[in-house]
Image (tube, rainbow, N blue to C red):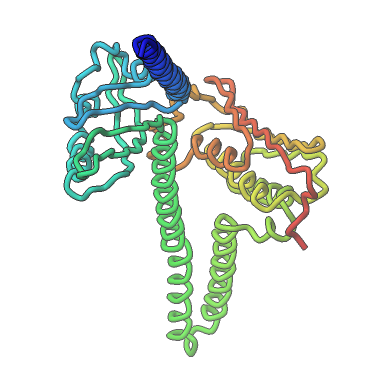
Length: 400
């Protein structure tokens, strides 16, 4: 019985120790678990921060413009190049309605597309418009839009990726202008051919018809006049044939297809000299082989246009055409001793009213990768210089 209190005390002590140990173990377990959770959370935050930094670095270093709008289409984020191209600071654009950056000419169309995305649940669309800039003209941009929605389909934000397409638009405008001028030149050429057929061939044939009718009426009473009329009709028919050949040659000389550029240029220059009285000399070297068909056609048309301009405007007495080929390079020079002009004063709008003209020479030459330089001064004559690169492969390909 005496040991009972002692045993009870030991039991209490042991129980207390066990309780303390268990409590300490529980506390340690909670602390370790919390620490692990904190470490894991910190690691996740670090990875998230690194991911955000990579994303921000990617967005800030791409050449395209990145922009984020809220559901009311107010700017909440823009990449640095957005501020550079618009000339505005982040503070000026933050919270600004995105529509105010769109040129008035395009604003209604772009806003209509954005409004449409609210109702048709579209997620992506592309459009082009002019982006306004401070103190500078607008630039054309192509905008790729991603509409971000929540689980209920409500729009959360708009993400725009914009690419500067000003150069492309300028090229498209040039091509549209060139196409219009080509069609205008074609119409002028058709008009010229129609006029030549009417004023030349038609009149000659009418004269032949008149002579033959006169011969038919007089064949029984004036034999001498019949013979003379037949001779005159034959001469008129010969002239009509020559005129048809001349018109055909101007449209597409068969000699160019059959014998090549040099033969066609010499034939054209001989006809030009006979018709105008302007002494025309052709010097050529290294053109024993045929050139590519497109190159020959372009050079022939440019030389033909140059001779036409000389006849109409220069008042020249002498023309010299030099053509030389060195390895894979062709040089063509057309020089006259006429009155000359200031190239800057006639290349452009004035020339467009006359057809392709000098601008057309440059555009034709550029179409085969060449350069066309026009050197002229008043009373000093004019020289047209063509520099044409040739392909390294055989140049006679495509010819018999």
